[in-house]
Image 1 (cartoon, rainbow, N blue to C red):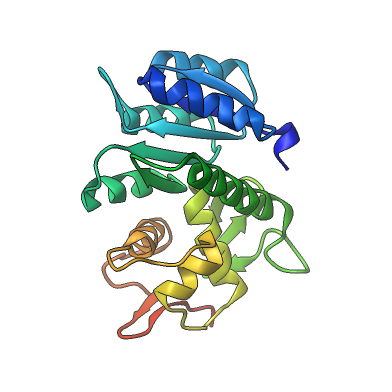
Image 2 (image 1 turned 60 degrees about the vertical axis):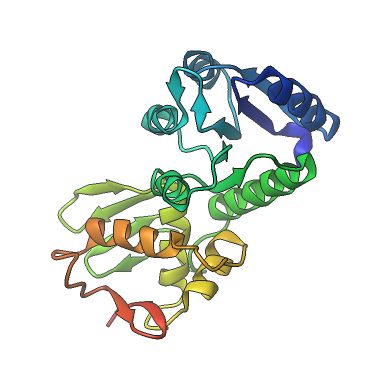
Length: 235
């Protein structure tokens, strides 16, 4: 998989950026390096990147704001790097549509494994239809456009989905009226297991509800089952 994949690595610390770039190249990836937000956006604009690894703290720049700018024009997967391990910061990254989050210091092999996992999931989302009959299934007055990561209402309104939202909604549509636990949803949508403080599924569900429910505080489509998990009602 790595032979034709282009990774953007953004970190203002040269002693991290340069050796990690060399390591990823040794694993068969094409790598572009950037030390700040402006350089990163230039790379995004002028080249076809398959994944971005962003440091949260970029000197005068903010990795979260950089992610927001990237999301305006690109839906490539994003992995955040951070020297801080606060849960709130990690949740903010996931809410922005990040695909993974790694705390510094980290083993380069762990980053490589995370990159490979995210790229596999991204490829699966793009290649596999939600069901065997159509890649635009309907539910509750919405059509899920998998290829373009969009929700289209019966009236024609569109809601753009992040990669994480699209993956999770795809799991729900593939399993209508089935209560799925948070651990099951995390494994099925992101290919990883939860830790004791993992709230990413709850955050994704909250964001999806704001897009599909008339009243997100009283959901009719994406329901919570206390002690169980969540289910998409498709009756």
